Amino acid sequence: MSAESVVPTKSTESTESTDVLVVGAGPTGLALALDLARHGVRALVVEQAAALFPGSRGKGIQPRTLEVFDDLGVLDAIRAGGGRYPVGMIWRDGRRQGEHRMSDETEPTEAEPYAGDAWMVPQWRTQEILRARLEELGGSIAFGRELAGLVQDTDGVTAGFASGAPVRARYAVAADGGRSAVRRALGVGMTGETVDPAPALVADVRVTGLDRDNWHFFPPVDGKEDILALCPLPHTEDFQLMAGFADASAGPDLSPDGIRTLVATRTHLSPDDVTEVRWASVFRPRAALADRFRQGRVLLAGDAAHVHSPAGGQGLNTSVQDAYNLGWKLAAVLRRGAPAALLDSYEEERRPVAAQMLGLSTGVHRGQVRRGAATQQLGLGYRGSALAVETRADLPEDALHAGDRAPDGIRGGVRLFDAFRGPHWTLLTVGTDAGVPGLPGVRTVRVPAYEAYGTGVFLIRPDGHVGWAGESAQGPVREPARGPARGLEEYAALVGLAPESRPSRPSYPSRLSRPSRPS
Image 1 (cartoon, rainbow, N blue to C red):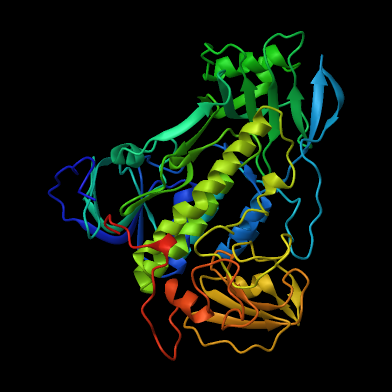
Image 2 (cartoon, one colour; image 1 turned 45 degrees about the vertical axis):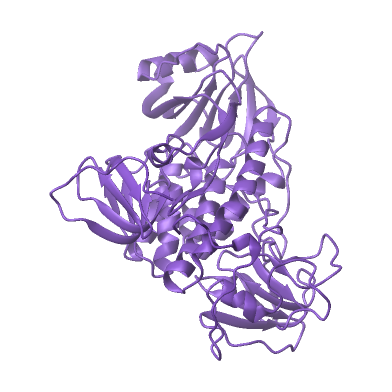
């Protein structure tokens, strides 16, 4: 692929150098930089704004993301900084009409310890927690760095900024939101739809006259106005205000007086009950998906790759999981000598998931889908991926397959999530004495038979998904049901885990072929 996009602005300052340039310090960029730091990869996070995002907008942390945060070492802080979703309370004419539960209740299990445990944390606090962990690992954020140009060649990416030195990186990741400057510079389009033509207002406010035990809903009366909701944010004095506007041409007033008038018009509260407006924004819900997630040495993640309606709490969670999928792959290429074509699996795996979650969030917004097991994201996996190598034949559909999320559980005194935690791979043998090869950087764990796994040998990826599965490390006696690599050692070479005894060059199966573009 030829050098492309906007030529970086010239600077008299010397060029900074890094392995990965992360553009954007939202949850996506911070989670990615944190994960790269765990893997020993140098990453520079640049952010156009002067500080982290100040609002509560993406406040819902789904159970699968809690598992990711457990692995990244921030779960305790997330727990301490948030709380469970409050029960909804419907109001009319200043009187409570009854409770409203927005989701179907599910219970945790041994295999899914956080199921049914969606956690509410204001987005600004989630970002502060991720930033603190990043800095603990030696990373930092460069604020006030507005992208002015981007060009790539066969060896890397050079980015120029409105102020500050240019940056030269081996790869760059666009994590700069729905209006991504990187995506636009690359000319990557987005395909989508307007979920709701009417605008919506979201704000963080302080309010008197309402309890903090409920999420307060004020439905429209006699078709007038539109819904308004006030949700108490845990461990703060704030409420998140959400208000819809039936008139598609409406331009909501974001001033403190405008928001006070809005609250007084749609609720039994007075303007003076809104004591402070801390942050406010307006948006029109839409759903859009980038046409591709990779262009040469630049990859798209988070809102730069997919834009969601806030309904159902899928956007931030899908974004953090993009970072979790991409981090170990960049590290494998940059540190372990894995083929650069491994990065093609990022789009292969994450774009279908993003499309699925876009459909889900749109369905929740339109009242076609109820929040439940699907919104928790525990069932998402990569069975069709080139990195999901299943060598066992005739497995039932509901059995654990390569590509699936690796379940938790305690067997033989070992908690599996404890064994998986960290940037390493885990070679797990369940209910078998099968011999396994020594693989550098791989933790070997043996546990008794466990129904969530059945029996066999499972190579667990750093992002908690089963990469390779077989009855033994040598692969099947019969032809495998699916996958380009038969034996465990062949798969290990594919992802940069050459056996200790005889390092080998990786092969390039058809779905991970050498790209013609620079990689």
